[in-house]
Image 1: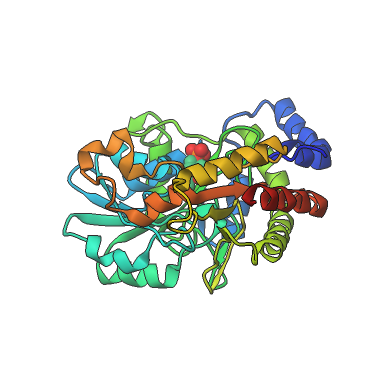
Image 2: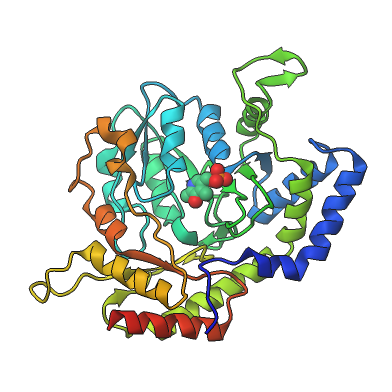
Length: 381
Ligand SMILES: *Cc1c(COP(=O)(O)O)cnc(C)c1O
């Protein structure tokens, strides 16, 4: 039996390595490493791909979110609503601009922000909502936008895990006021290093973003705002242009893999498979199941012990898995002062004890999936 990693970038490189090397070589020979036509072409093509008029490339998904908040002048005294069940960057940037993250609990079946609870969290300090299309699955953007419109709030989509996903036929990143993308290597569209992008249909916001990512200058050496240095370099842009052509194919492969997991796992007791929201098309950055705690009274095992035991047994059978995320953000040391103590966002806390992400990457073979499922059945007993 061969080992199955939770993610394997080497297979993709084997398939398209020649193209990537050729594209990178061309940039290396050109001497134009920062800015220039390759970065511009990527911005144009990525805007076209997401269905927006503007794309501003930057250094990372984290910077994309940070710059988005700055461009809307969100800062001290403001509140931003988001989920505690996400990668730290989503909330970290809210704090970094001086605003306060307000965490709203998640939905047990989709793992996304529970839209039933958003309105109750809105105050007169609330300026924006950051929905996260977690694991590739889009949030119900129709409903979220109508809540935001009713309260005149900005919506910044965290699309880091969902490049190519659609809601009601529209790509994520084109529905809210601003979309933020990460090209971290394991995302659906991954660079060979760091990278990010911001999309919008608002030309004035786009202007602000371009100024902020370049030291706050519109005109060279005239600084109008305190900006940052956040660029996508030309080598990464060239690599991303190659990969952008494959993105839809890879996402379709991920969808087929998810479909196969659904089929193989749906009748298995002791776990729950992820549920899709009707109207959304996930691009399955992760396939994340819940390992359910044992029936009450049948054993004294704690739920997280149950998930962790299954994970360990899978590891012994050479199946790699990941836990995204083992501790929700409201319980992290950095947010101790917010006073959201254990028990307040119960679904997120429950998910952090139960979730287990199975191997998922476009090149994962059917026989490998069967091996994963076989090992999982075995470890569930
Ligand atoms: C990866 C990720 C980010 C940050 O992206 P980087 O490019 O690593 O800075 C932000 N939000 C979510 C949900 C992510 O998964």
